Amino acid sequence: MSVGQVERSYLMFDLSSIPPGATVTSASLTICRTNGSGGSRTHELRAVTSAWTEMGLTWNTQPALAPSASHTITVPPSASCTFASVKENVQAWVAFAPNFGWRIADQDEGTAPHVEYATREEPTVVQRPVLSVTYTP
Image 1 (cartoon, one colour):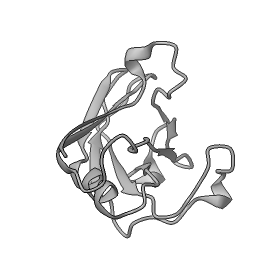
Image 2 (cartoon, one colour):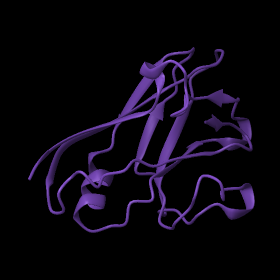
Image 3 (cartoon, helix red, strand yellow):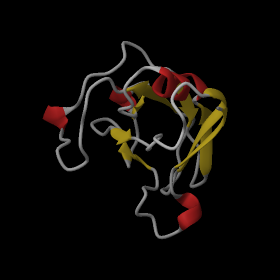
């Protein structure tokens, strides 16, 4: 997944194993930077509000988004993992809202350096994106 001046990434997890109406007590998204180094950056997670597909997503077909970022990620200064608490989004998706995942973008795209995050295809399994959810039925 790439994030930079003209790069945004989209990420979605299947939550169907969580019973509808469950109470989410915690939810954490872990993503791992796989390239280079750079100064301090912040990437925002913005909930996506319309359907998209991995193969159908282009710059011109980006889906609709929530009006503001719901969470932020402090970008690691070098290749390593970082996380964000995403409990509010996951709770909404389990309770009532359609789950279309998140868009990841730099908060200041005009000056954003290129950052690579591991994807689900990453050969090093521990670097793949992970959504950890704890809930009570």
